[in-house]
Structure formats: C-alpha cells, structure tokens
Image (cartoon, rainbow, N blue to C red; front, side, top):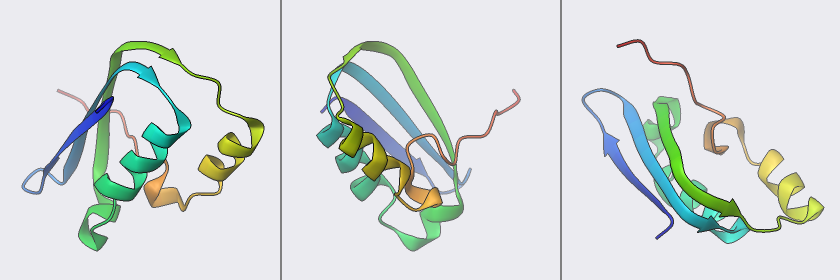
Length: 84
C-alpha cells in the first residue's frame, strides 16, 4: 500500500508514510481508513512523504473531491508541526 499508517492513541497521533507512485485512489483510501474512527478525528497527523516518487495525474475533479472532504479527514488537513 503506497500510504501506510499507524494510530497512536496514547499520543493522539496518526503517523503515515507514503511511498512510490500515488494515485487519487490512494489518497481516498487513506482518508476512508485512517480517519474512520470518530475519536481519531481530533488527532494530529504526521506524514512522511520523503519516499514518494510521483503523484500520478489527479484530475481536477479528484482534487476537488479531496478538497471537499471534511476537514478532519483531509490528507494533511489535520497536520500540525510537532516540536521534538
């Protein structure tokens, strides 16, 4: 799976790692699966996209669909900068 994730309930954090060539379906699957639990909706998100080779053509319609996804489910929408 191009986007793998782990939910750390103790730290209230979704940790995702994306790799390879990503498609719109990869983004949608990640949104549907990682953010499905109601308690996760208020978690922070940390995404490592350093191994992404390419984002395959997302049509304007796909981008619009992603943008219309509820805020708590948008890829990167819940991202906050974490201080170490």
